[in-house]
Length: 105
Image (tube, rainbow, N blue to C red):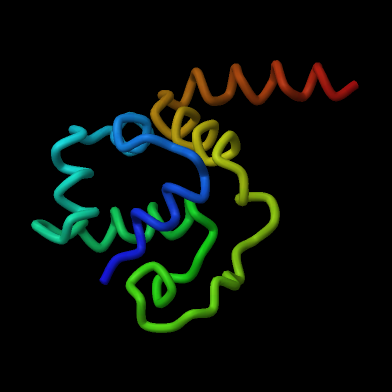
């Protein structure tokens, strides 16, 4: 069993918001929660990362929420930033890195 409903409820998020975050339809997310369909392996990893739980916990294989995940990747904001950065072409990535380097000085 996937613990999506439990984890989503803890974060006080709607199915609509989850669908937006994961760039899927609300119906698809609803089907995941209700066990009608299953997320892909990549989507399961993204869900575990988002909820900061292990895949085993997400899938109901154990009851231990602890997740050895690097501290610099824990927030949704950081995950979104990395995804947006990855979508940029090389020139835009370099421009953004230069801008950020100037902000640190």
